[in-house]
Image 1 (spheres, rainbow, N blue to C red):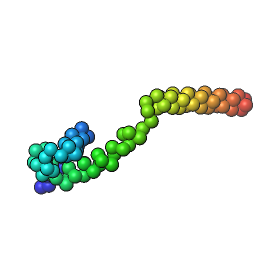
Image 2 (spheres, helix red, strand yellow):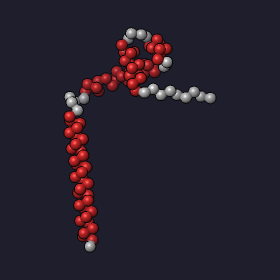
Image 3 (cartoon, rainbow, N blue to C red):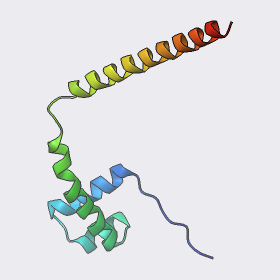
Length: 95
């Protein structure tokens, strides 16, 4: 009978990786403390190190995201109106 794999949530992974980056304890000590394999801690630590620059590469403020989402919603609304108008005109021309 095989053992089922445990799934850790992202918050737990981040906590373990940040603790490993802090360097207060060795990775084997952290593995024993958190109950995960040391290779898993190394992988989470590496993933955190690779993803950290993306956090600071975002444009300042989320206003640009809100503006682009609003613009996209307006465009979808306009496309919907034009499709209804087109269908109406096609039906009228068939009569």
